[in-house]
Length: 505
Image (tube, rainbow, N blue to C red):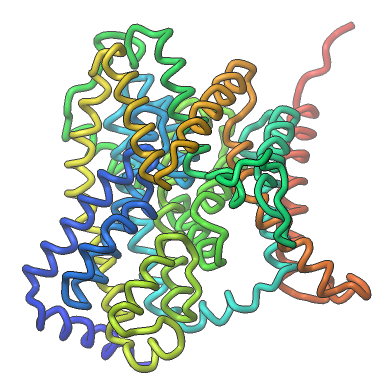
């Protein structure tokens, strides 16, 4: 493979459109995606969907690069609101709330978003650098994941829940609640289940609506009991470029965390439907499990922010790779991008790599530029979101509720979703009051369809016996990883108990 030609071909396309035009398209896409991604309900997927019609008015290359930039900005934007107000713009940004929001509560908002910005930049750059060299081989590996492997991916993600939250009993209870809610909709046979006669639930509980309710509405209720968002008047931050850059540079000190989290995001993103939510959870769990002071996670540890944000952006590259190489979208946003390619007369997959490899690598090369432009777009977004923290509670709470309602209604255009929004808001408030981790509910919702579907497919394929499943190397690797994930926390507890001095009787 001639990598020199893979670099020169995209630049020939860029020169035909003009480098300044390419810059404007990428930067505007990043800004639009970042601001939309930061708003509850307007996830990266929704942002790409909303920008799809305008992109069709642009030439093929510009339209596709614009949507790619919106996707990148949307993934990043969700993390900023998570840090500022504990409101994840998407499921992928939930893990960012664990340590990002506690840092904001301590008056370290700008340091926190600086760490997140640095991690996002590195995660995007490293993951796409890997995709540049491994586009075709990585797609070949992903296509080998059958139902048994996908089932183990879901089980492995569930196993990580206990590591992430630390409270095993409450975490398991909340996780099973999420799985139960995730079974609402249709069975794998197409039979309605748990819909109570509401046709709006035939496709299941709308995930975006659920997380907005669990986090945004419940947070609005909690804010009613406060006079201010931060803990003291003198902690209310004013825009501080120096603190942003302090956090930005600080992210690079966690170089092993950055590399590991970016590759976890890339690896999970390659798997269709696994998604950045699972990637960020796994990455956060690994960072916590391998940390010298795991108890500091959840209390405002910058490493938690770095792990979550690097994995988020790494998973974007993974999703893009399976879409480009095999025409299999790894996420909702890449499914829309697949449609954009087809609207412009190109079908992602082996034929795209053969006939339009310049376009495929133009997307990859453009993401290198997007990673650096994200620094400037991110600072603009940070400056805007930072002002929200200084808004009085009596103004902020109605704004949060109004934004949540508008974003929820825009998601599917159904008033029914607004009712679901408030139901999940009340549920989230109740769970938080009794110290049940919301993230376990979210992970249960994410994994329910995958777990059930892949389980039934596995049973159907191997109806004569499951022994062949245990002869599949990828399945065994995932099984071993799951067992290790369960044993490591247990081992640490045993070691901790042994290290305690015996009390004198």
